[in-house]
Length: 238
Image 1: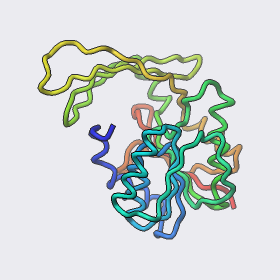
Image 2: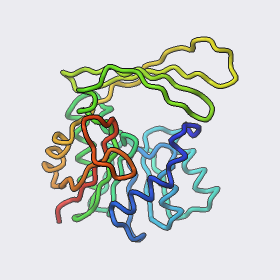
Image 3: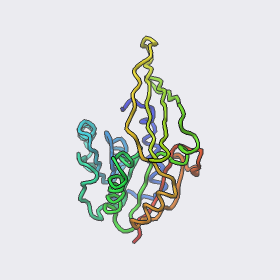
Image 4: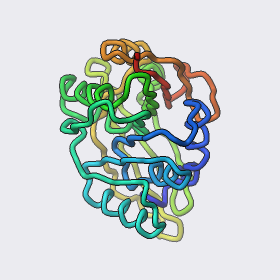
C-alpha cells in the first residue's frame, strides 16, 4: 500500500484540506478509515490532535508504529468498526478520505450508519471533508479500463457499473517493473456503493450537515460528471 504513487501527495492534500476548511491548528480531528495513517500522521506533524480509526489490524498496528517512531504524542489510532463508534460531538473536523469506508457495506441501511457516525462525532459547527468516487462519472463512463503508472509497477484497472444498485466493482492487473512480462492474475475488489452530489447533499442534510462546496481534485477544480473523484466540504449546523 505505501508504495502506491498517491502516497507522495499526502502533504499537498493536507495543505488543501487546511486551506479549504480554514483550520488554525487547534482543531481536534477524526480520520475515519485512516488506513496506515498517512493523513493522520501528517496532521499530527503539524500540531493537530488526531484520532485515526480503521478496522484493519495491520493498518492500525503500522500507524501506531509510525507514530511511535516519530514520537508523535498528539495522535492516537484505534481499531474499530466505524458503525460502532461512541463519539458524541467530540471533533471539530471529521475526514473520510480515499473513500473513507463509505459505500463498502452490504446495504443502504449499513452504509447510512457511517453517515450517522459522521454527524454524531462532529461538534455543532464542525467541518467534514469527504473524498469518494463520483456516481455521475460512472453513469457516463463505466464500464472502462484505466492505467496507473507507479514507481514499482504499472496497474491496469477494469471498472464495471451496476446502475440499479448504484455500485461499481473494479479489478486490476499489476505489472511489476523488472519481472518477466507474463500476464498476472486478475483480481476483483469489493463492490462499492457510490453517490452523486445531489444524493450526498440529501443524505447530509437529513443529518443536519450542509454541503458547502464540491471539487474533483486537491487543486480546487469544481466537480462535474466527467470527473471520477468527488470531494465535498460540509459543515454541521450549529
